[in-house]
Length: 351
Image 1 (tube, one colour):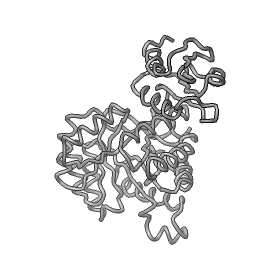
Image 2: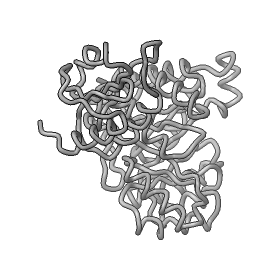
Image 3: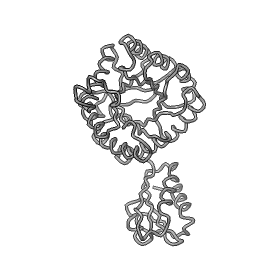
Image 4: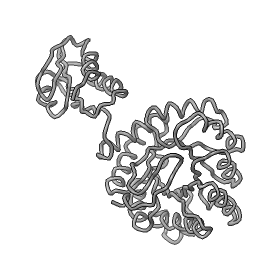
């Protein structure tokens, strides 16, 4: 796997690359200057399973706020810098564990050097970010449009600028909202560099389309052993990004742990509100630290047989529900008690 051979980078108290576990990232959508709101959001994201958090730093006030935010949180903090090199320096001086820049946006080589010098002095990794939406005009012309090859060349050009300044504590991200272009770019760059890769489908969209695009794109990339950190970029609450990222990693077999809920599609035999019940179960199991599969079935006729591959399951009938373990009915309960009965079983689960 490519991931096993990437360079190990230290971000705060966490390591990425070199076969270390893939870490889940998200980004706050609060004003970074509002320390209280930002800290509240980060703590909620930590609880949900976020392992690295990124904050926008558009102002000097935001850069200075990082030191107060850092005192209250427990995961590495990445400062997102777009244009002003002084903000990158201030963010590092205020405790940023990593900075994300596009050297092409920072300006002259002197300005990039000023950022790199502080990063070197403080051992702060730099994430070099390249986005298909801002690919250089020369590369668009060279490759007759925005292409995976152009993205890779752009990223490696930026990396070389920083390497030539004597620094190699780097992470690369190359993002595109075009899923297949993004996947191809990662396949190409994984063969050309040993730096860890942060993977995501940028501007993926709303919960519905964003989740689908991210699942397909990240699935293709991660399945090939490429990627050291991930973010599911959604137009929605950051907490949704964490839920989706955890599910993608679990579906690919990269992570263990967490209850997996499977449910049958609705059909004419369904005798309960299966859609509502399945959603209730999925919400209910979020805080249960078991690595098991739970089935939610819509009828008492086929439910037990279809649920036999799950560790435990429920099936609904007219006013009555069944509790099933490994395909065997172990209890019949009133429909109104079905959810509570399942939760009690899970909370008292014995392997």
